[in-house]
Amino acid sequence: MGVVRRRSGSFVLKVNPILCDGFGHCHELAPELVDVDEWGYPIVATEPVPLSNSGVLQSARYAVRGCPRQALSIERSNDTEKPQ
Ligand code: SF4
Image (cartoon, rainbow, N blue to C red):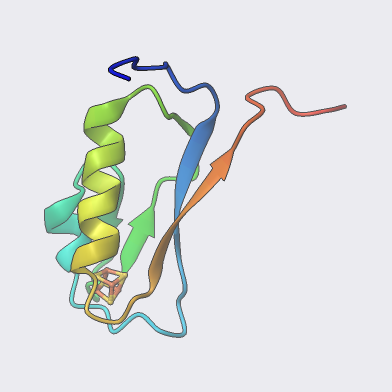
């Protein structure tokens, strides 16, 4: 009730290149995470973003919702440290 917990972990935005039509809406919706190549296809940042970075997470959600081909997804990882 009213308790906001800080989320640990991180996320990356993933694109399914088979579904993507390359119109680049995701770049407009999440410019922090998505660049576009010369043909308009997305180049998505591969560096994990902390879930606590709510601004970027919100942009990623907008991009997922705004993608007309449902080609985007948010992949979460609870461990920021990878096992060796
Ligand atoms: S919005 Fe979706 S379909 Fe359009 S370029 Fe981005 S990933 Fe591809």
